[in-house]
Image (tube, rainbow, N blue to C red; front, side, top):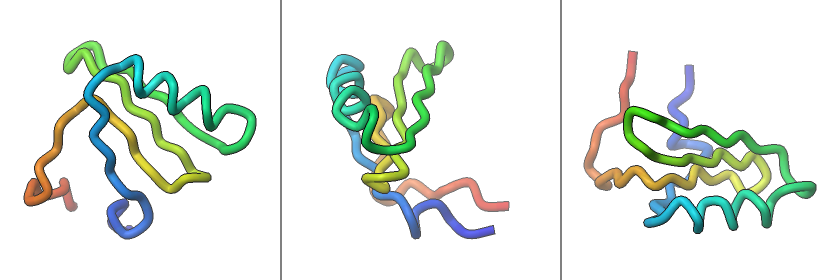
Length: 68
């Protein structure tokens, strides 16, 4: 299985409202998935048109991905 980092750019967005604006901007133009985590109280958008993952979860550049 390929690593998602090879296809999508991760973009930290500080507020859920900003993520909602990104979702609305892509709506009707791109295929996307929006996910809300109650555990993290975080909103994440995966946009297949922009090839970006936008999330209120801060991820450091050196943070390893979960590889199997």
